[in-house]
Image 1 (cartoon, one colour):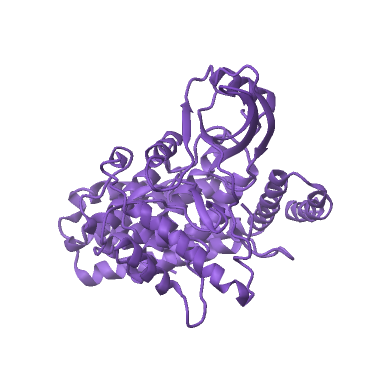
Image 2 (image 1 turned 135 degrees about the horizontal axis):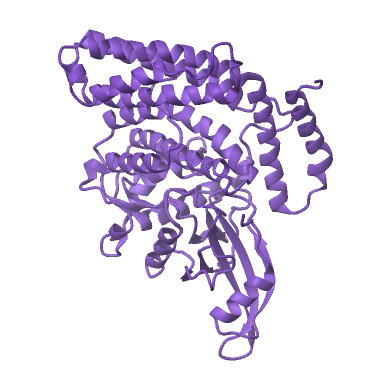
Length: 178
Length: 342
């Protein structure tokens, strides 16, 4: 169906800015209108870019989690004790889960759920590795830590492509919107 | 679903009952348009109190419908005002806290303050004309004097230790702030935030241990957060982010005044030097830089919390969507930059 959903949102935001906002007099309504204008642009960008970004992210975080798993499993005694024993179980569960049927369309909902389940073990891995760094051989530990930080950088950079509103003519980003 | 609305007749009826003033009328009721943390309403009334009818202004504060998105409770904010009123720190008088759903206006808790006349801005402060350089410096000094008054308070004697966690010693100030914010995040968290987990680890490893004092901190402070009359601060507002810790943290906030530079006369170091002169407390610029990241963490927690009313369909205000997405990302990215992830 044309226009696409993102084009409809563009149209709604354009109309809202030009014909609704100038008619508002109440300060609270004007302030909310500004927030709505930005929220609409945010939705427009997410419609276009969030799906591919999360899809790529899910692929990369799997590599990072496997590296964490390898580090723990290759370190004598680490996998038998907490918090690493629980962490390995959590990583295996997140990596092994089927988030959609084979051949099913990867809906935004399913890839978001997948991202959530894959990111929890990464949070716990970050906390556990930092708290128990002395348990690991330094070179291997630093390698995995660097890999985690690289992944986080790429994830944030991808997210900024759709999370930060950047196409609003005549309005300064983040200025006066609250 | 309760809404962000308040009717003058309901406020009149509430105040008539609460103040035992049957002749009370509400002359005006105005919602403060800015801010996202809580609702603020200004009420102008007329009623008889020991004599002829007189005008009296009030401020009503309450949480947004659904739940608070602040990292502290409404009651906490009220108690801050209550404890500060008798001190030299200028604040509006908190009148009462209403938690009786039968009495309150729509079932939500609220508290009342006296309305302090004044403005939130300083005329010409942002006018780049050099004619206003001295005005900018004087306003900065006035703000610093008020911060010094807060930081010099005997917070223990005033009971602030009952309201919020106190660091065990000055060296632990940053870690106590991280514990408080990480605890709050874990309490409300509805999705994993690996970047924030990484940044919290970095903040712990790089926490300054050189705080000169443990002080009551205002949190959100600076231009737009206080009430001014004729170049003087007559009331300090917005105490929802108050805590106990390193005074350097308040300079990480200090909006508007941190950026005042008058060539050869004044800059941020001058502000800190003047603060030391009036407070006796030394603050390192490096600590202020570090606390800028604690401020970002505070923002991450707050903006994440703002997503919950929308996800749970308790409050569908569009501003919460924007705050919990774009603003949240911006805060997270700032934190990541400081922690060397970006």
